[in-house]
Length: 414
Image (spheres, rainbow, N blue to C red):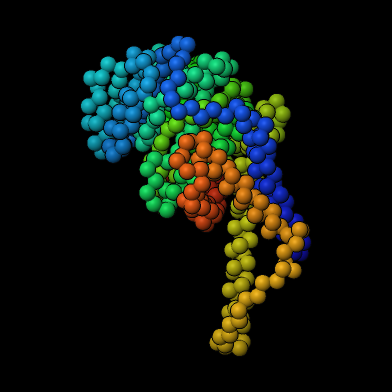
């Protein structure tokens, strides 16, 4: 009976390594196309852009967010900023009113209906050819918009361009673990862009041609992940999503395990349920690598982590149970021996080596993501925070998201 679990374990480890190797091969084939500029760029023309900032109880971060948008290195008369109060119960509306007199800022107030309804209100009032949302807890690099619009200028087929998102001002162990994850995410996002397989258009500063919404309709609830649902819809209709790796956005990340858990539960629940909604594209070649790689990769990741975690819990429970049996039989008898290391257990067939190889590929992804986001040091010990934090906590939100999907329980936004 132990043969079947071993086979499943080996298959899941192989698939996990395969995904990382696939990314590495994609990187090696396209590395010369990755651009990380440090200075200003000049465009042939500067199209008008509307940037909508949905706000719900964002009094702590909103002012710095708006000022970062006002400081964009882009002609001021070409950037229209919409601030939408989505039924806040704190001081958000008063802060929004401070910016009501700015010539390129328009303010709105509405009853709470969710982020996607605030974005749709902005869309209804948009007259520009380009539109994007921006999270009210984020800060944008001054050159980000120009670089994104430069991507549109270079590639007329691009219908949306996503930025590189990183953690703003990481202060503790949990936030530094997320910083490593976001660094890795920048690397993965760029590789998925090369494959035409991006599955999320991040809330902070993804810019769309308004034609996307004119053709496909407005934002949808998308299980509280409207930025994922619109990407799925675009992929299904073969609308190209690009990634501008040097368009930097910095977001305030959860500062505690509880806040991180709630955020990731919502994200994974959104992935599972958006994938269910768009199951008709799965494994169909006409939808490209989005259908035959990105979505299956996400499903495999959830299955792998859940299975491996269940195995760890089972083995730990079996170990504790066996020790209880020993204690109940022979009583307390403490003996301790110096553990001995035997080289016999290290051999080429050991899957330990494969797991080590997997970890090395993950470290490479984090390091190159750091390089793409122009971190001061490509290598930092902080990036090793990723493994204990996400290795221990991630299985819980993955399993909870699966459970919520089965029971049809929607997770809270915060």
